[in-house]
Image 1: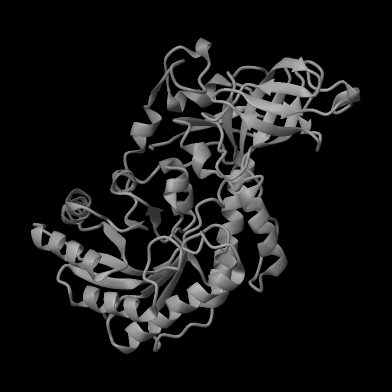
Image 2: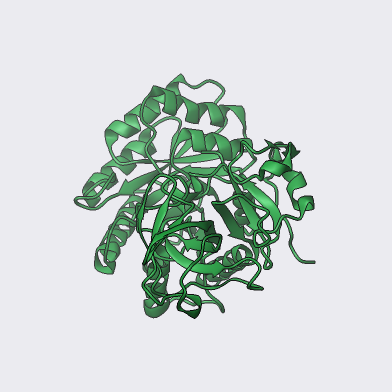
Length: 442
C-alpha cells in the first residue's frame, strides 16, 4: 500500500493531528476556514491549481521516502547507525519516519529541543552540545529522573564541564539512570571540543570517576571543516582517544562504546575511518548524525553528496539522494528587462549558505506539469519578502521570459535555516496534491 501520510511520533501524536490551523498560519489558504492538521489531506488542495498562497514550503513525499530508504540501505551496508540531527527540521513527524527506519537516537542541540523529542516519545536523545548553566543541566537530570525508559547523552570537552554535570547529578533526586557523556574532540580554530588527545583522555577519566555520569563514548563534529584531510585527522584523534580510554578501562562494562561524528557533508569519511576500529573486542556503535539527508538540498549538500559519490570506498545502494524540499513562489512583477520579482524572501528561504536557485517553473493554464527552470535564471538578492531573479534577454519559454502569475520553485542550500522559517510545511505527492502537513517546534 502506498504511503500517503507520514507516521506520527510514538507518543502524543494526537496533539499534532489536532493542531488548529487557519489563515493566520503561514501556508494555509484564506478560504480554508478553521481546521485541524489531520483534516488537510481531505481538502484536496493542489499547488499547481493555485489552491495555496505563496510562498509555500513543500516537501515532496516520494523523494522524502526515497531519501529515507537510501540512507537506511547505506547504513545497513556499511555497519553504521544514525542519530539524525533533529534540529534540522524540529518536526516530530519526520523524527518518527527516521525512528521507524531504525534510527539509533535523535540528536538535538538544546534542552528545549530535547524536551520536544522526549515529549513525543523518542526514547534516546543525544544533545550534541555541552549543557551550560544550572537551568540547562538540571533540565537534563530532571528528564532522567522522570522516566526510567529515557536515555540522554550529552557532550563534554573539559574537566570544568564534567564538574558542572557532576554537580547537577548531586542535586538531582530520584535519578533513574546516569547521564551519558561523549567526550568531544575538536579542531584548532574550530568550535567546541578538546584540542589534544591527552586533554580528551583527561576528560574521559573525569567522567568515569564522577557519580551520576557514565562515559558513553567519544565524538566530534567535523562539519565545520573544509577538506577531507582535516576531517580524517580529527577522526583519527577520536579513535586515539577511544583506544586510550578503552585500554584504561574507563568505559562501563556491558555497554557498547559509542563512536560518533555529526555532519551531513563527510559521513562517508566517518564510515571509512570507523570501519576497522577494534577496542579490545568491545561492542561498538558507530553513529553518524547527519540531519540533512532526509530532505537533502539543491546546492550545498548536493555538492557534498557529489563528492561522496565520487570518492567514497563505502558501499553505495542503488539510487541517490534528491532534494525533497522546495519553496514555491509567484512571479509578481517584471518591472524591467532582465528582472523578475518573486514572492519569497529572507523570511521564507535559507540564505546563509547560498542564495536559493530556481529549479522549476509552471505557467497555470498553459502547461500540464512544471518544467526545469532555465539554467540562466538566477536569484541575485533577497529582501524580507521578495526575491530578485535575473532573467537574461531571450531566456525562458519562446524567448519571452517569465510572466506575472508564473510559478517558480526555489531549491535551497541549507535545510536547517529554511525549516525554522515555517511552523507548517505542506507535503505533496507526485501531482503536487497536498496529502499531509508537517508541524515544526522551533
